[in-house]
Length: 237
Image (cartoon, rainbow, N blue to C red; front, top):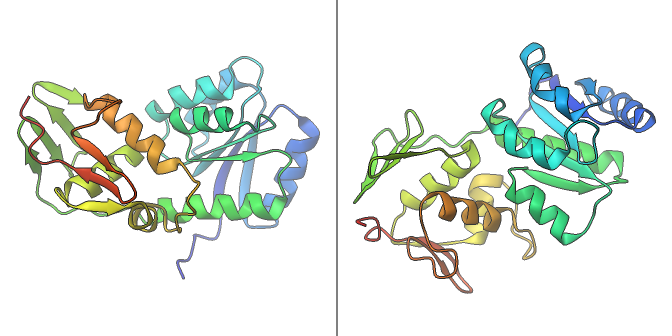
């Protein structure tokens, strides 16, 4: 079993002082160092002085809400983001994942479950996928694993680490249908339960950034009932 380092640095962004104190006390009993930020508009500044391994992010915050922060954080922070909110509708959860969160828990959450979610995200972060050393080229698309640089024609495409991992996995097995179960095991180290939409959301973001059609994708295809297929001959235009 993969061992996590003994102490992880957690940034908890939560304006409910009582709840924040409860979370801090519990996480400390699990060898985590926690600092608390109570406003959304001061989080980016806080990242300069505190380098967390993971961010636990409430949505309803003064100054700047968690959804807006999810859009900004990838430019300043490469670790996992776990949204925690009393907003529990499917639409809220999908929005959070589409904006870049790695996981979403609905408050109130059992402390043991929160720790399990944190450890799962940290475990994935500690085991980054190591792509092969050579670049991949498909028509106008080039993928450089050394710098994680993506170019489509003359345009550089900016991807998050998680989006790059998915693109590399699909492209390195171009022309093959990869099942959701395989993708979940490879990237997330968990089984696909038939309901989780993390990979679907990540694929949707990839399509948008790579100029694929959302309604009728032809570059990263959905093979219904099977999984996803990276089409190697669809990058010439």
